[in-house]
Image 1 (cartoon, rainbow, N blue to C red):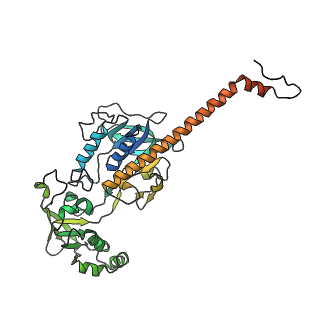
Image 2: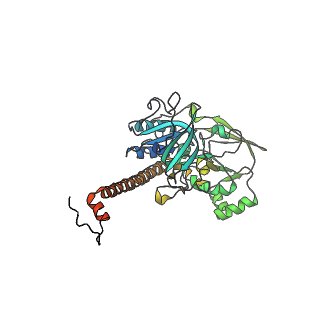
Image 3: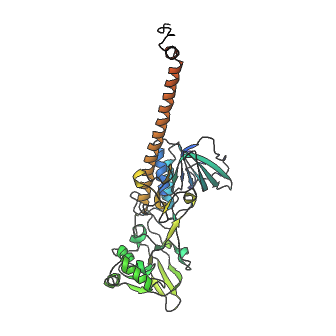
Length: 396
C-alpha cells in the first residue's frame, strides 16, 4: 500500500510532512473510500485485489472505539478493535495500488454527470485539499446518541453495551440492568434472555400511558412476558451511573477469544436507594457519523444512507456507494460490515471495467472510421458516384 509514511509503523497514517494531495483535471483515483473501519478496510482490500487505484481517507474515529474487545469475527475473536484495524492495514500494506491516509472529508462534489467526484478533506496536519475519483464509497458509520446522564458516556462500551453479540457473552449470568424506554423493555429481555436472567428494566421515567400503548402494539402481552421472566420495572429518574469495579483493571489472557468481565456499577436516582448492577444492556438512538453523504444529495431512509442491495449498495447518486453501519440495510456488526465492503468492491470494479470497455470500443470504432475515411478506394467511391460523370472503377 502506498502511503505518506511507513504504513507498518503507525496504526493510523498521517499526511503531516508529506506533499499535499491535489486534484487534477482527470480523476486521480478509481475510487475514494471515506472511512477506515471494517467496512472501509474491506472495500479497500477487495479493490486492491484487482489492482484498482484507490485512496482511503480515515478520520480515526470509530463507533466501536470505546469497547474493550471485538467479538464474533472468526480468526480475530477477542482482539481489540484497534488491533484488528492495525492487522488489516498491515496486510493491505502489501498491495501497492491502494493508499490510506488520515483526514476528515468535509464535502464531496459530483461533476461531469457523476463520472468524477471531488473530495474536499482536512488533513491531520491542519491543511486542506481536494482529491478526485471516478467512484465514491461511503463507509462513514454511525454514532450513538447517549443521554447526558453523568457516568454514562465515561463508561460506554465497558460493561455498558448495546449489542449482545458483541459484548453480552462476557457478562453472562451476571446481574443486568436495561437502559431504554418502556416500549422496548420486553424486546430487550427477549434478545438477552439466553445470557441473563437477573434483570431490572430501568426505564427512566418513560412508564407512561403513551409508552404502554406503544408496547402493546409492538409486543402484545409484554407485561405477561416480563412477569414470566421475573423482570422488574424501575421508573425512577436516573441521576448518575457510578463505576464501582472495572473489569479492565484485571484483564484476562488477551489470547483468549472470550473471558468473563467483572464490572460493577451503582445507579443513583432522584429519589430512593441506589441499585447495583454488574452490567447494562441499552437501547439508545443513533445517527450518521458524517453528513457528507446527505450534503451531496444521498437519500436517507430511516436515518441511513439508502443503498440498493441489488446493485452493489449503490445510492441514488450513480457512482456513490454506502456500506457498513451507515447504510440502510440496518445490519450493524463487524462481519456484515466486512461483507458489505467486499460486495461493493466487486460491483464497483465491474462497473469501472464496463465503462472502460465502452470507452475502448468507442475509441476503436473511431479509429476504424478514420481509417475508412483515409482509404483511397473509399474516397474514390464516395467522390465518383455512378452516373453521367462516372469515371470508372478505382485503379491504382
